[in-house]
Length: 81
Image (cartoon, rainbow, N blue to C red):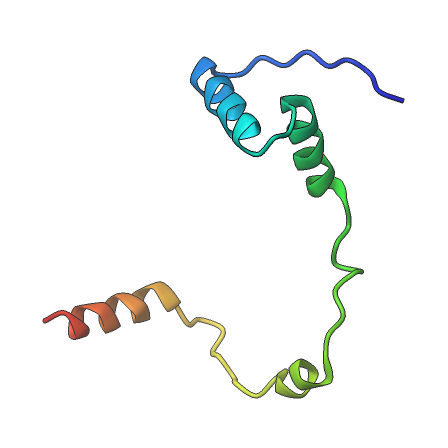
């Protein structure tokens, strides 16, 4: 059963959303409904872990205090020097 919902959004967001919906041949209402549905659905149960992925689990041991951002920054600085 469909029911009306009134939303207050930024005007620019509304205009861009209308263009997006038009380009994808979908109504703005359906677009919002699809987005909200994707947020509330529990998709973790639908994901099947393959035996290969299962076998890779735990192969790499990363220290608890590892900061990937600093490590990646160091990598980029070295790469582009």
